Length: 116
Length: 112
Image 1 (cartoon, chains in turn blue, green):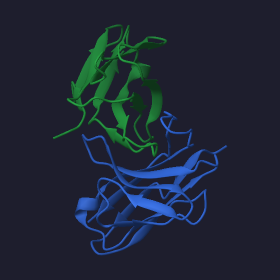
Image 2 (spheres, each protein chain N blue to C red; image 1 turned 45 degrees about the vertical axis):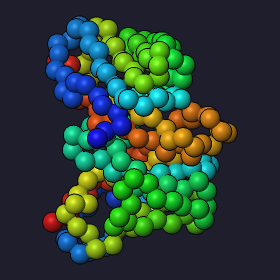
Image 3 (tube, helix red, strand yellow; image 1 turned 90 degrees about the vertical axis):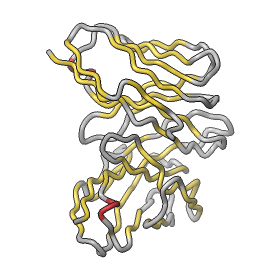
């Protein structure tokens, strides 16, 4: 299993440009998440999905959009990039283990995005 | 205001020393997780603590969940350069969706 894979690893955008960060997992996990990590900070949740066709906002969703058409893929779309979106983006997945379960989240290696 | 306050923010020590990292909150949690993140990689789960007062050991790492389930600590005995990394505590939301809220992390550097 490759686990959670993310592309690209690095990207530089100009203000106002758009891009899609790709995330794929091969563990048949139903839950998937997008986080961003700013320097000196922990990770903050952008969006999450509990299954194909179902997505919801996290703590910091403004400026982003997601879709989940398959179990494996959970792309994150940035429209009209702004310098405030300069960050490292992590995708994660988790297997639903029932109410109250504490199953591990598996993280991808991240995408480092700079908006100039 | 951060839900989880980690301290210290930075820790630089020599190989062989002991250290403790703290994760504190005013809220009560049903569980708490510790992750370790190496440069250029995503976080990796170390442990989940669930019961108040619980102590879990992972080789030289000892994790404790506070009796009131509001805080946790990570103690490393005889630190090694391979322990270098960012240590993050995290708690899940009140649903089964597993959404995590992270502390800001402790950056640990162990010098040979």
